[in-house]
Structure formats: structure tokens, C-alpha cells
Image 1 (spheres, rainbow, N blue to C red):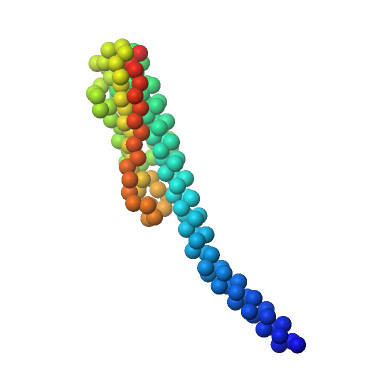
Image 2 (image 1 turned 30 degrees about the horizontal axis):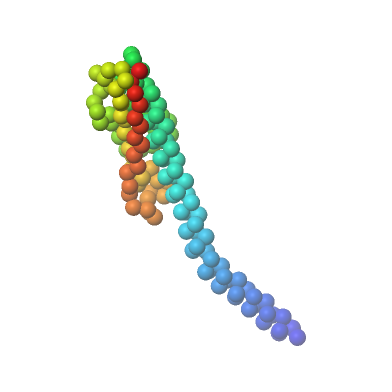
Length: 135
């Protein structure tokens, strides 16, 4: 009888080891995928916030695009966003008249802003574009 119990325990341990070996890669992939996805969501939200605050600063009557760029840079620096670019495609907002649309685009690559160095997802450039009317 003693050999049967030992034999059953050994078989159960073997089954558990096989189940663990099958499930571990899936669990690891899910964990690292969730980390990458969360990082990209944070990056996109940071770009949106920086673009919004930059354009709000730029559309004021006594302000210009360089003030908006400074505001957006401060936000992106505080959130540790790397290799970003800030552009006003239509030119400086200081020359715009009241009621004109002002556009800002804030971009950053995913590879340099990934905690896992973008090993699982190819590099993409995320962009936030905001349009507001000059005050």
C-alpha cells in the first residue's frame, strides 16, 4: 500500500509541473502586455494633457506659441516623457487674430517611453492634436 500513495503523489506533482509549464508563458505574456498597454495609455494621456495646457496658454490674448511650448514642456518633463516634439503647424499664435483657430500637435515615440523598452510592440509615434480659438 505504501508504494501506491507514493506513486499517486508523484503523478500529481508531475501533472502540476506540466500545468505550470503550460500556463506560465501565458501568464507572463499577460502581465508584460498589461504593463506595456498601461504605459502607452499613460503616454497618450500625458500628450493630451500637455497639448491642452499648451494650447490654453497660447490662445490667451497676451500670449504666444513659445509660452504654450514652455507650458507643455513642463508637463511632459514632470511626467518623464522622453523624445517629445511640440509643434504649431499653422505658425505662431501671436500673429493670429481673435477668433482664428490655433492648432498644437504634441508627439512622442513609444519605444523610448516604454518601461520594457518596446520589446513586444513595434515603435509608434503617438500624437495629440488640439484645436482652439484665439481669445
